[in-house]
Figure 1 (cartoon, helix red, strand yellow):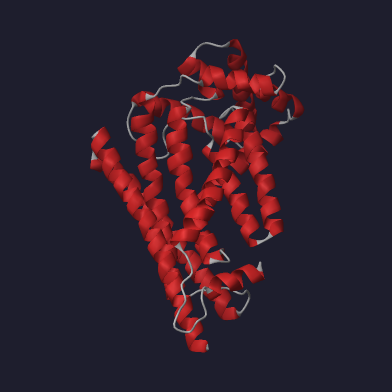
Figure 2 (cartoon, helix red, strand yellow; figure 1 turned 135 degrees about the vertical axis):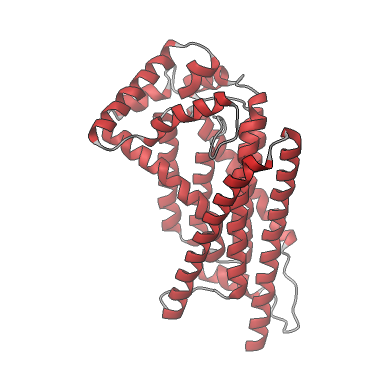
Length: 358
């Protein structure tokens, strides 16, 4: 019986590793296509890619060491072996490659689309909020500079969470299907929401309306409000990173080159899409974690409006799109990872154990 369990566990991890390798091949193919289409100099992208990959692999190694320590000390029920280490490292490589490759699309392909849908998205916002721009309601209800700083802090926290998510999904996912679905949905969000969706809904966002769309007195007032809060925040010693970063992004966009974390795109909101995936992942682990991350996702949506990055409808579109991707992934992974009977007759033992633990 013991031999059968070890055999099945190793086989399952091997299948999981192959799934992450398949996702990696998608990113590599996308990188080749984008560099060919945009005639991007490899020298411009290589340095950024190396930094992202090195950072992701370093974090993966730290996570593996921490998990091994937890397992050795018996502090938690974890399934961690050499196959798991390989899967985590491959997930880290996926992260390190995806972000700079997506940057090529966002900075060198998406500008050709322009920003035709900002007026329509703004009109939808006003229809939802009974004729008012949602940023006016947000700042009226939360006028304190401290609230803006707190929302900005959450917005900044999103980045390391997004970066670590695929690795944590491999380590903490209860079943093989959960792990593959979460990592696959992470990549699908970049491609379908950040890529296809951004092209279809070409828009700059409220903070760039006057600079890139058209003169507008309402958004000019919003710009003035954000600058006023930025000055107060600087004076307090706690600058608002989002507002400081907005001008840097605009300058990089006008230069037209490739830079780390560059590019301008409003709808759909990748911040809200990923925060929704965080909540989904939380619910696969524990309902209280899912509830807490759902609150985080809600605050990210509020912050995206309050800080001027997005129209309110951008986040709503992202939530629907992310939920649709998650539901579709169930069918895809169920067929791709269909349980097979082993010589011991145990079937997909690990998945059954994970579901019973949940």
